[in-house]
Length: 254
Image (cartoon, rainbow, N blue to C red; front, side, top):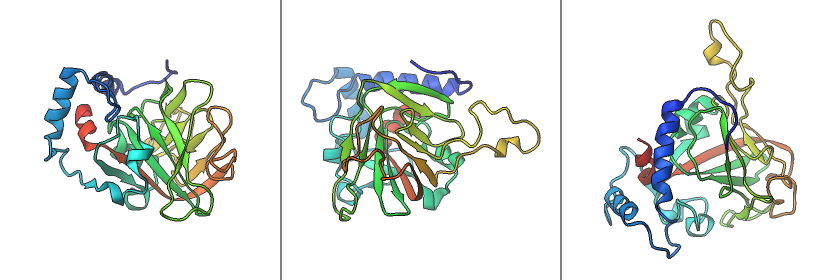
């Protein structure tokens, strides 16, 4: 299912084809038999022990990631795959424009955020962003959070969906959003579809990813601390926001 939305038809076609191929691969490590063709494509893309990745992508050793991928990403298409950093707000800029320039058509992704009060949270998206001003109903995404006051080496806990599939929003001029209200990072500053015309219009309406809001209990369960927000308050100012992706899977969207 999906909502209204304009443009991005070429992105939609690329993403649809990539997702069709992904669907032929069972998530890595679940013990099932993968479709032979899908496995062959995966082997060709990964190159065995010497993976060939997208140009310029620097993968991060699992023990240097801010989470344990073997635990957090179990049962997802990112399980067992090397990850790289697509976007880092303090390095690349806090605007939704910079987010989309670096993250669109990167395939399934994991995001990590840190608030000005020190709370850490994140989310997994099984589908690629593509600036569609649309949404997709999914059941296999999730949120996660670190318990309040946890040590730096603590691991996050998943916050699962309740009540079945729900929307993942892909704002053209905003950051990512899970559910109607569960997590929104950098919501667009003007309504989707624009309505702004004239000189300089292309520079207006972009969301600022320093702004995040979260309300749990409707689409998703409460936080590990039993709170109705991933970061303990309805809105928060972020001091860092990062997006991790699989260069191997991104090749399918190129």
